[in-house]
Image 1 (cartoon, rainbow, N blue to C red):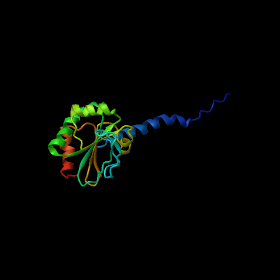
Image 2 (cartoon, one colour):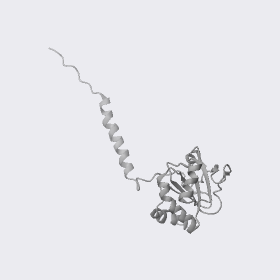
Image 3 (tube, rainbow, N blue to C red):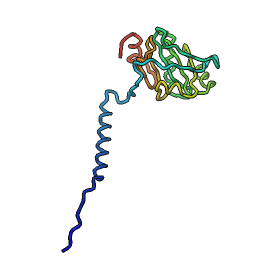
Image 4 (spheres, rainbow, N blue to C red):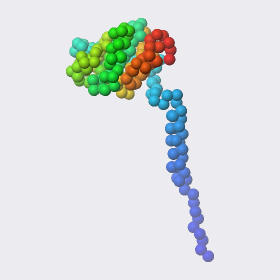
Amino acid sequence: MTEEPKKSFNPFLLLPPLIFLGLATIFYIGLQRENPNALPSQFIGQTAPLVNLTDLREDPAPVDADFRNGNMQLVNFWASWCAPCRAEAPILERMADEMGIAIIGINYKDQPAQAKSFLNQFGDPFIKIGADFSGRNAIEWGVTGVPETFILDGEGKILLRYPGPITQSIFTTRILPLLNGETE
């Protein structure tokens, strides 16, 4: 009489289905967020990081922005090579010219001549404007791409981080209420 070989269970066979179920659960939870396109920011409610930049208007004078000046202000990261930055330029110009909103511009990883050409072509709404040649300031602010805009209160605390170009709709629904003292 021949003995049948003993069949043993290999626990590693369960690994692929368990990994799949785990990933599927994580993706499902991620899709259930209120706004799946929103990128959370750990800086909301925190004091804005200091900046030390080269001024694009008066090279090489440094730009040290004091965000604790008692006034609300916007900090806008932009670049001349950024197509969405071109789209938001007229809205930033109107915000500065017609509404007197203080906007600090941080030019991200750009050539000074190209940045100045951009400002000549699309307008310069910035009360201060500096160049972040290395991208170090953008890293400290948690910038994920340009354009990216931050709203700061008079104490220099970040109230809003908006990644992407500011449109009229975004200005009306997200930025203007904050400027008028309404909380998000």
